[in-house]
Image (cartoon, rainbow, N blue to C red; front, side):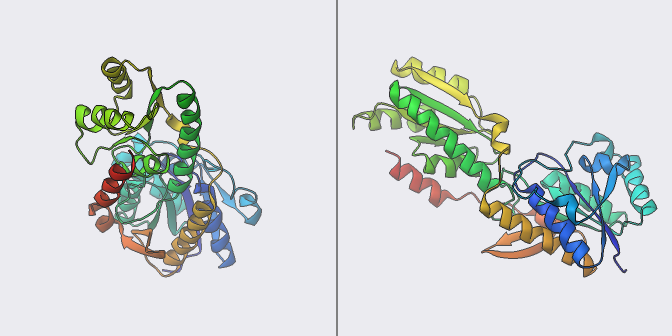
Length: 322
């Protein structure tokens, strides 16, 4: 099939660098003689035909912006057969030959459903959680790491001023990659992640007490979102130690902000590769990065993969955070 017109959308949680990916898709496609439509609000936009033709200037001055110019939304209607058929019918009516979707694993399942029904799709991993198993670094992850680090560094200043313990929850959904790396970068005394079962006495109180013997007066405890319970953890620390403890949930600020250089370059590479795949007649693929090489995997295989947690890195963190 000759590809003449494609669409691009962002879906699921927003991530810094999504705009850079959209820009790369649009400009690569136009440079190769294709027409491009931007779809607003993810799969909802496909269902409700909320899309606009893009040109080179449509994506000017967005590479440095966080969020997504195409907006994003969850779409319960898309989970139904009727919703998917509406989306496909709208694409057919506009002559769209393929769609590039930017998002996480839920977004890729939607792409897989469309591909199975005859509409070729390519996925680009955009999520701060870094929980796409076939991909070493997802778009937005590096920016989120740096945002968390900057905010926790500020918390450290006030914790040190008051000889206070700070328990900080970072995002990551059910994955602890963000928490582990931020914890190392910020010198956290304890890093609590869902991949490794923790014991409150051993992994928090024990480490605090051992480190306190070296005359340290303030402590940072990093807790992954998938573990949660930071309010209770802070309360229990204060009850056991008698030292004022505060809980901080960084929340959605972690998704915002100007993307880092790494995320801008990665998003640009992935957007360019996605268009190339469609032009080669390929579909149902996820663009990934492995060992600094841009690759692609079948979506079904990618979704079935399990991402290993770096226990060596975790053990290293345990050894140096004293």
